[in-house]
Length: 452
Image (cartoon, rainbow, N blue to C red; front, side, top):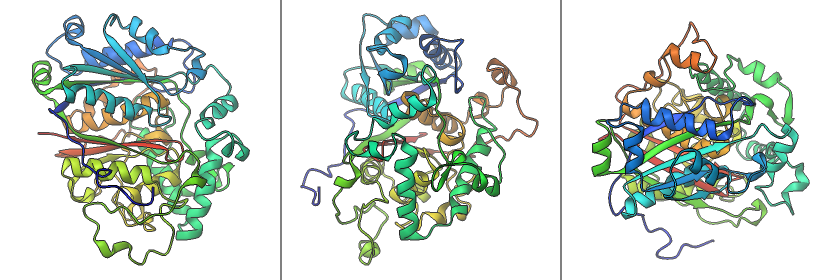
């Protein structure tokens, strides 16, 4: 699309407010042979219902559920079609209606969008959104090939059936256009692996230096292993509710002010150039002299589209001013810096400034990926977007420590709370956002949460 039609940029509206009342997670691991997918999903549901200070127990909550949304990226991993039906059975939610969402890496965010639509429309008052991924029943090489099938197999597969190869090309192009230092990308990996050290759910907590990231083995030039997301097994749950139902279930509901989606062509070579779609805080003259094609091979139109709609829907005039924390889909360090620009944290070509300035760190202007993100904590794809929103939800409730600092929680997952543990609760946080992203930007959702 080169020119938008008059209704293409219509700002969505919820017919009635949507709230989040609870979140639940398992920990995330490379392999989880001791638990079935059903057990992992049940564990995340139990946390959501029994550990979020709800005013009802499991039996009463199930009596109030109207509909369910399930989120799984690929049937291939578990070799099970209609896997959502097994999860629904295991949770004892028959004969309530449900469906399963699949939009690649954005599956979790898209599932939350579908659940929000059900609540906002009046179709349902209480909707569990349940995501998981079973990525440990196939070898890593085969798993990478399955994931790479979310790109166009007729064209991108020639690049090696691995997403790191697709993003390595983007990294090379981005560096050619904008001269971002390799050290800048490495800092993102250092930050997110570090924050994962303070999460009992994390798969890849590490205390690293920039030098160690840069000297790490290369997956696909220029990306090293430490700059790539982990392949995970685990589950995540959110409970979405109408306003009346939310206040019957909890004293601490958080409003899902907006969640919007954008897409772009599956094949990156099919992406046509167009004028930059400006966000509310970007003046008209900002890109009048922009010297590169847009979105080109360095930007994600789908992210910019989702952000445009979500920010306008939620009344976000400037994300740096109006948001208190952010979760990006840091599948690779390069995709993170690209997303800084697509979200308007810096103008196109200047994304490096956001991480170099310190604004992306805890106690910075807009702390980003305090969860450890996909690089440090998890990428169990169907659970990822749900996990991100759960982390923002707990921050806005002021309950980050409740779900991260308790030594009993660490022991539950066979871990020991580190002696140098840091409390990453953002002080007085009122609004946060989360980005769920698929492929090389084929599908994206942006969610905005707000404490009332």
